[in-house]
Image 1 (tube, rainbow, N blue to C red):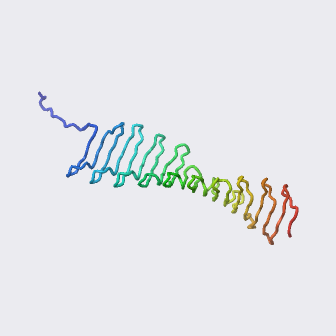
Image 2: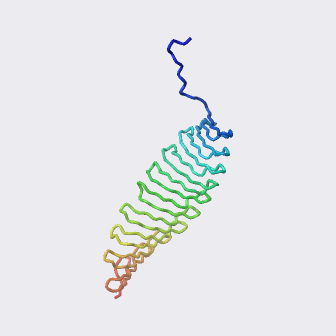
Image 3: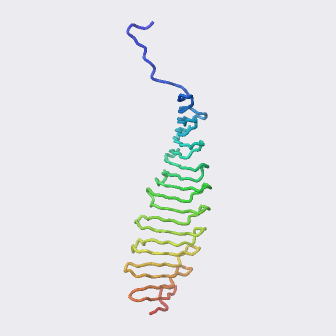
Length: 239
């Protein structure tokens, strides 16, 4: 028997392991469920009942948002991994070639990676706490071109061979603030420098295998050439 004046309050809690939202035709359009393995999932489906948007929380606590195409392939994935690093992935129908935008937790660097159909990174763009850089890689994952800006704010462009050794580098000198072009051999030794000094005078320097400058060609009020010994002293010059 109820006590006089007491009213039964409706429950404000609904409990269960699976809840389904259906349209007028009976097709499941929304679902909240505890899936096998302990993953919590919230799915939104299209008129054909295919999952198009899904929000998950994995048993390890990682949250994910997946966007699916009409064939049920995940094309966009947003997550925060177990290290607390956020990431956004965009993929093709094979979930191979695509793009990933993420922030690494160890150095707090924001990065964008572009992948080919073999799942190899071909373009890598980085910024954040690190000096900004853009690297282009070949099909063998070797870096072939690098553009960056150093801590002093000076840009550079580097080109490498398939072994990432012999290279050509164009940069702005930290000391003179003027442009320099450097060519390296396969032993990573600089052999040729082309530069314009702070007085606006162009010059070319050639180095031997021991990194000794042996020839200097330049233009001041008139062109000149110096042949140098291993101590960088002129042994012949003209004029």
